[in-house]
Amino acid sequence: MVLDQPHQPLQLRDVEKPRPSRGQLLVRIAACAVCRTDLHVVDGELPDPKLPLIPGHQIVGYVEEIGEEVDSKFKVGDRVGVPWLGWTDGECAYCRSHRENLCDRARFTGYTIDGGYAEFTVADARFCFHLPDRYNDVEVAPLLCAGLIGYRSYRKTGDAQKLGIYGFGNAGHLIAQIALFEGRDLFVFTRPGDHATQQDARKLGAIWAGGSDQMPPEKLDAAIIFASVGPLVPAALRALAKGGIVVCGGIHMSDIPSFPYDELWEERVLTSVANLTRRDGEEFFEIAPRVPVKTDAQTFPLEQANTALDQFRSGKLKDTAVLVMDVN
Ligand SMILES: [Zn+2]
Ligand SMILES: [Zn+2]
Image (spheres, rainbow, N blue to C red):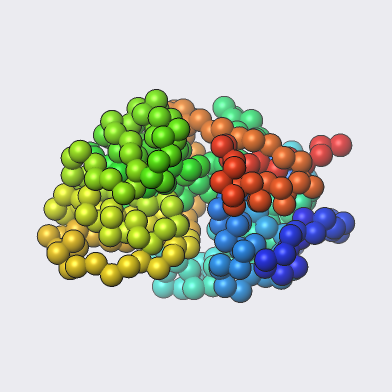
């Protein structure tokens, strides 16, 4: 499925099977989960996508062919995960200081390079992951972005005991499970009036769940914002104890309204998370099966990618959409 221009539906098109070049794997795709970032790309909210573009960056597939100079980490037939971070130069100041997520020349799967809404893709082997056996292809796909970037956001909260999560979609739901596993007290904020999601959060183990217009019963040590809603930033800062941190976990957010300095003062910290490093992925896939982190997926055939995106956009999806490819 190909995006010719933002704001247009994806087009079903026969795409030639790509050839793996040096360092790449040819991957036969089994499943690709749909991320909110895919919506941001299709809706023109992220600048300068590759066009035409095959979206999708939570790819689960099987190695069909190996290009020259691929290290021995993978062999033909192996299951691999292909994440958002698709390539870095390895030599800029960021790469050399273990911050490849900030690489000046990074390329991103399903954004600046073709992604997984397709039957085949090629991927730089160095950025692919082995995936835990505990999960089948559909179950593990939503972990590849929401899990990895969510995990990076979570790690930025340090050892915060009282943790707030604003936005309880895919990433929020996954990270909540790890936070509870690690003994954190969880406070979940949803759209005001979304009692069903609040109930889900309490059922999972949240101490408190309420609307994002409410204050939690106790001050928080940290809050992660997964919703792309700028006004949540001052709201989350107001919910923090002294020295607390607010982490913005999304790639896109509406404008943040101004707020008095008092709400940041007393060493409160406001930060964002960009992309992921391979180390985030390795750590996440080590802890996820131990929790075990569970995902709820709703599958769509690849050809129905537009339907999946439309339902996601209008909030009609209860579970994470996962596109599944015809395996014939
Ligand atoms: Zn770099
Ligand atoms: Zn994503």
